[in-house]
Length: 161
Image (cartoon, rainbow, N blue to C red; front, top):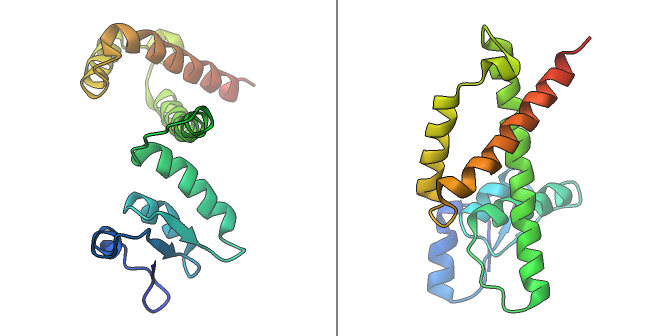
């Protein structure tokens, strides 16, 4: 089943269409490829996109799907493909985080490693541990430390003469 009305998909119907039909739902984003990620987030099983929007639609399926769609892979290739989708979402989020951290570095009166706020970092890890209880604070602390340090190094390289 392909959902599209007047060249623009009605994303509010995606889950209802799957429930009513019991079949996979494809969303036609040919008219607006920028809606690809939203369609995946709304539950689309696949996307129809014209040649101009194909790469954007494929990226949306990979990144938004890896972030938002639960998977139950049964084989090693399926597991690896699911991990690749999660890794793609992680890469996109890490890139976004580094850009935001770079903005913080430009705004703070004391930047770089000297400007680290360890209380804020501990609070960040504690908040994240609520979302990732299997990792907990002990598992997340070294990961976030590495992410923060990598972002600081990149910010320093970008501001170096």
